[in-house]
Length: 244
Ligand SMILES: Nc1ncnc2c1ncn2[C@@H]1O[C@H](COP(=O)(O)OP(=O)(O)OP(=O)(O)O)[C@@H](O)[C@H]1O
Image (tube, rainbow, N blue to C red; front, side, top):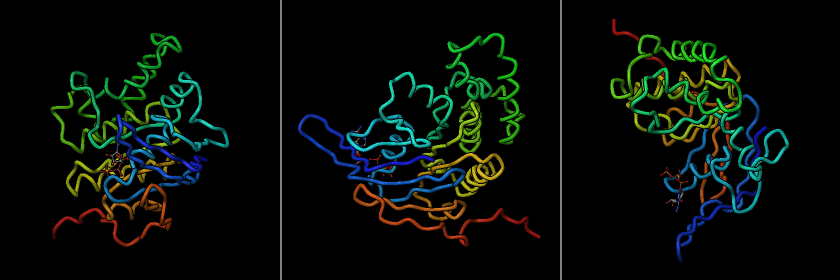
């Protein structure tokens, strides 16, 4: 469904050139949970940005359902980013002055020029409340980010990413700032969303334990994918049993 073809990307500043992607090919299948691993600086975030049209390649293409999306006009890429893709970042990117409910509603606020916000705000609010309950934060809707733990902030960010009912979630080290237990909860939540709602997920991670929660793992080296294997099944940490 989401295909990267021969992607090349070099960052340039003055005379310095940093070649990052050097002809990368990748096919993300509908409904799969894919993880991307690789050394720091290998270009994982860059690839995620190109897949989600947050940045454009120097050459090569990104196709969604057979149609090129990397070269669409800015307004159409904006629509895709609002409706088709959901983004989850390592540091949550929540707005500190807003309640958790308003943070989750942000993608709908952004879209309001496209339709009559006032006529539909009740439905959006209901959906945002349902999503916060879904991620286990029904009791924290009026709190602000500084009052929540890292894991709770990331769960709020996941609810926000799901608001517009995206087909693809792009998660950049979603557990990178969390302890083992909170990280495990986040990955289990992503896995449930993938299985129960059929959302395709592409996740960059350094944590080889949580890779086991996914379906397939690709490794990046030198700006291309060098390994593409089913994820190992045995290492994903299961929920801890209460001590007896
Ligand atoms: N805007 C930019 N300008 C210049 N260089 C950049 C820019 N963004 C990224 N880079 C460089 O591109 C390379 C790849 O960065 P990227 O963030 O994609 O790697 P990564 O694999 O996600 O790394 P990490 O695991 O540390 O997050 C790095 O060397 C980085 O310094």
